Length: 292
Picture 1 (cartoon, rainbow, N blue to C red):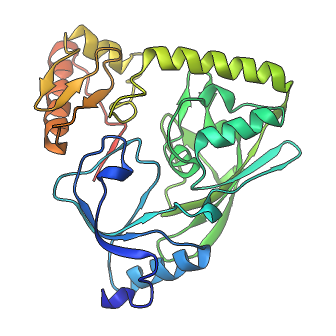
Picture 2: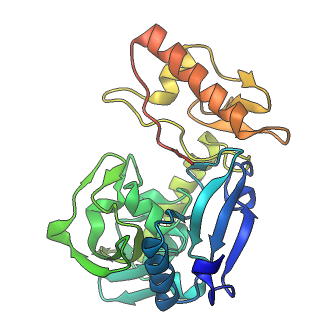
């Protein structure tokens, strides 16, 4: 670990990534870093660049499948509280990239600020939510994003303003290495009414998705004019298994990883689902989760 000498206080070798993902499966990171400040993060990223060591950012692990072979290079996890601060100023909420999306939503509702509450129940961090433009039928996070501070792969900090940002279905132009923080501009509303709307949304989502199981978020993006879950269900794939992985009985766009599951099982099931949907519906499903 010579290129990381002096950073041993927050860098570990051969750390299993399974506990950091919702699937709870997968291999180790060659190096696993939990920086305690932006300065730590800058130093780490700079050294990796100088030594041509790949760097990946791990958010909440809710849309990630890690292969059994593990991940070469450095995996950065923004677990320190300094990356999860949430601040309120008028109609604006500023949150660190490591802040949990649901914590930010709760803060906005408490402060009487509307816009983010339809996203309740979507797991993960602010950084991950922005990178993939997390959304629901009620809207997406991008439409309320006023600015973001990002770190490039060279370790440079840049402020990205609203006019520079582009958001589309489950994607955004925020593709730098790290989203350090983001500011959301919301609408004033009655906190009590917001709370009721948020609770209703939570109940609906909880009833239709396997939130208590070992699963990631939706496996596939919805094709234009179609629901991926409905297409999979129409292929008769609910309950189909590959080893310890199973297509969810509640919502077919989720895969459950049982205790004996491996990442290879999930990958096999993903391939089976894609082939079946392509054969029956002539639709190519695009992954929404990341595979490392």
